[in-house]
Length: 111
Image (cartoon, rainbow, N blue to C red; front, top):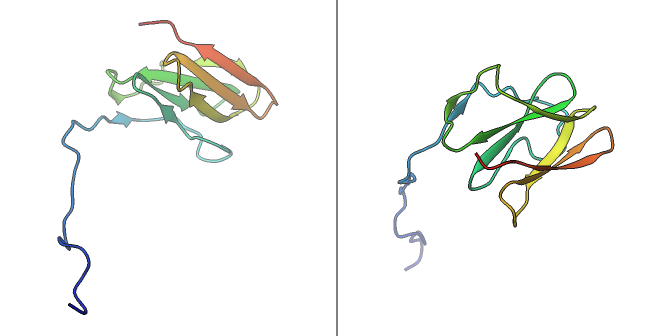
């Protein structure tokens, strides 16, 4: 048939069946990040933290909700973090790159 739409269901929308995880009050820098603004794997979410130096926070998927300003931070760069990525082979390893021309590998302890 000519002129018939190719999709069988024209106005079909969907929503995931799993519970949506939500993190609130993220203190991420809004500009100056060259790579990932945040990254996640099956256990953690890593968030670069706005303010002094290259600090970031790690949150487990079980720690949903508001992120307080007293959240413990990882700090190892003197410049802002430009990119971060979890290892595809080790869930507890994170690599960060900073504008101070350093790359750091982080190993998070279990728990």
